[in-house]
Length: 239
Ligand SMILES: C[S@@+](CC[C@H](N)C(=O)[O-])C[C@H]1O[C@@H](n2cnc3c(N)ncnc32)[C@H](O)[C@@H]1O
Image (cartoon, rainbow, N blue to C red; front, top):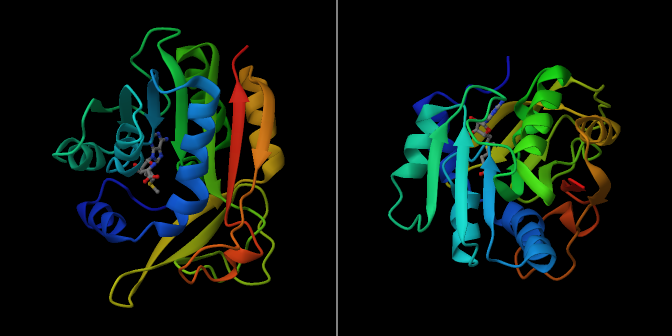
């Protein structure tokens, strides 16, 4: 069974995790790409917003309006309780079903969420709902851990066991290094890159692109992220 994000303890631990690497090689390139493509006077859906870490960054970088949704009320409560949330709001959803009209959002993001979904049919439902609620020419960004990085020692996490090839849809442990030296183990689902393309394509998205960022310039120790991209970022357009 994958990680239970409804649990307060899980929500608390995830909040404590230092997401420097996600920030540097995930959220920052995503937000820069979004602003270059659409500007900042936009309304963005953060699907699987968790405690609002990404939503708050979007707001801090000048995005006009952010709407976060998550299946976990615990996570929604955490996101809603932050004082620096600016023009963002948070709502609980039932998996895959969005309570928004067609064509509501200019862009949507889903960061480290699809690896928590265990069924391909559910991935497709989510992609279709996001497609429906985006405006024409709206952009959907997905960020996830890289399915091709099993066992690589990044500074803050190890994604899967070294040397193991995970099949599409297989359960995979991820070990997050926590402040103080403890390790927080979560259980994800490995989705191959082909599956992301297939799901996005079937939901109706076009111009699907994949970005994988490494880093040779960080002042901090980032482990093997100098040579291996820790994350995948997909960008897809509703046209
Ligand atoms: C690893 S956290 C990521 C949170 C946030 N996106 C971030 O980058 O900090 C994964 C989140 O996805 C949510 N989630 C898992 N499955 C979901 C689903 N089917 N629909 C919506 N949210 C889901 C969980 O409740 C959890 O808050």
